[in-house]
Image (cartoon, rainbow, N blue to C red; front, top):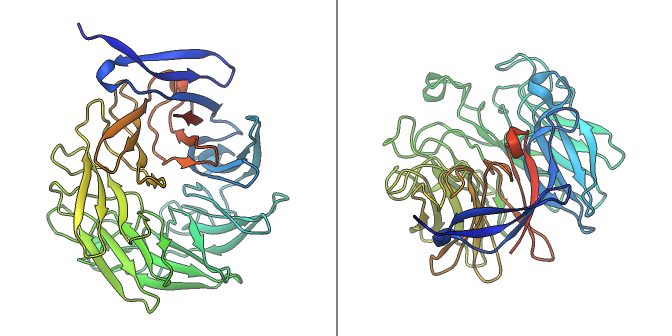
Length: 406
């Protein structure tokens, strides 16, 4: 019989403390506090990415809840440092948008910007619109900056936006763009685009994927370097070893030139990178894949500026976790933090820390009491605590927001 140890302390929103017992060989210190449990009603369900403001308030979106149309509509919410949750906006599922699935960003005036996968008008798969880019003012007024049409401009913006110094917004739409050939044969409405939205709402398609070696379905968000180059990933395309290609890491220059930095082959390198990448001061890119690797449970990788891909960790599907769909973060010491949606000692996913020497530490193993399936990544606030969310809450509720102190 294997000995059991405490992987960490679980503090529920009401103050109840529990201890999650797991095998000692995966036990690591960490106090996880469940800050909010979503009910699936007006407060939302299935939280997406989080951000923090200078005052320590957390902001995020939920892909469901709020209203009772368009799969539940979705919400934008705020959680104060004392745990008080405020509903900032509930999408109605019509022209205002539906199903916000990406991260938010905030400008100097306190306005938030994000995307919705559906809504915005008529058309696309469900006839309710092809998605939007929206602005949410501090007083709760929502403005649709752009509504996608599903044509050359794209459809289904899944991953939020980034902003440049001039106030232009950049993002990806996972379909639309090239509406013929290979991508239509896959049952899609195009291979996806990289877009730019001006402060006045003018949309420019910077690149339309062709679905071949250049990539297909840009499912994740973008980052920008000091020269204005954009970096991201595509879920499919690239190498033809997979049904529709195994995914790519790409660079898009300011002149619109797209370069595939790495095409996954579904070998030890991983496959189908569903999250974006981050970049360090030396130009190395870091990310995850939910599949591929020696155990087909996904990988954490680093891509050097010369194109060399190194697998920092290959998930085995046991106590170390499996299937990471979330973007990672990196601290000043070079440690990489992220989540897996499955696996772990309690079979609900993990929150992991990967040291520069490759040592993998499980900071928390999610399960029935804490919530399961942390599909989104974590953020680190000024005091060093990690914040994230799960898509399933305690006792099969509708998701959580949590804080973990190492």
